[in-house]
Length: 271
Ligand code: ADP
Ligand code: ZN
Image 1 (cartoon, protein in one colour):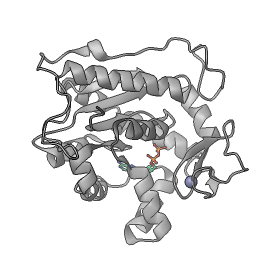
Image 2 (image 1 turned 120 degrees about the horizontal axis):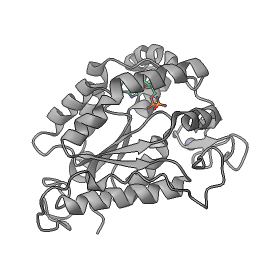
Image 3 (image 1 turned 30 degrees about the vertical axis):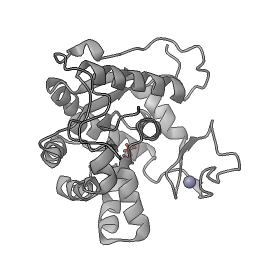
Image 4 (image 1 turned 135 degrees about the vertical axis):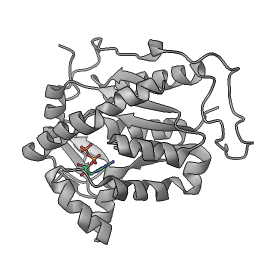
């Protein structure tokens, strides 16, 4: 059976977090929670939070921790996340947010943080060509556009170049990633909750790697989600394997191997 899980996906801007989180969300049947999408939704709806957030977002700055934490706390309190779990995209981005998340999830905690690793020159290329649906946040690019020019295949919304995908804002976001978000990698590694995979290659190749890494970690740590209520099942049932000692870094599948299928320059060819 397909288990739920509580997952965080880490990675630089342009590492493919959004695309991969959608895929993980379908695979494990868990809601995809993107703080960037939530904040853009607030801005579009013209709420007070949205108007406040827009100033930060347009210049690539981070929204204050307390504001984002309050928004996430509300979302994690919904039925679907409480029963199935979630895949968090773009959150946490600071150690303070990670500490806050731990408190929200206490006592069960997070199952796993997945780190998608992509070299900076490649993310810069991807961000320059990235286009997104204004309505449903589906991700396209100049090399894989929607079927009808700049009309979203999924919802008919307008597909645009994001306001903050300008060169200055991208550089600011990448700097902030180094300073504020990178430390989370060591933080989750110390907690024995980190797997890293290469994000170089086609979206399909990367998601195969991701699912393999998540499943591998799950069986090595004796199953996910102790207190997750599965729909129509008892708490903690599911495909839980007999407990094994926690594994170490053996599950870090840092695999930069060439992908012969991969012919699109924005997904990146291993050099
Ligand atoms: P990207 O990963 O390309 O920066 P996102 O959609 O994740 O795109 O985020 C866009 C913007 O939303 C960020 O630059 C920031 O201003 C704001 N934001 C999103 N998530 C967070 C967060 N967890 N903490 C603070 N600000 C956030
Ligand atoms: Zn759409």
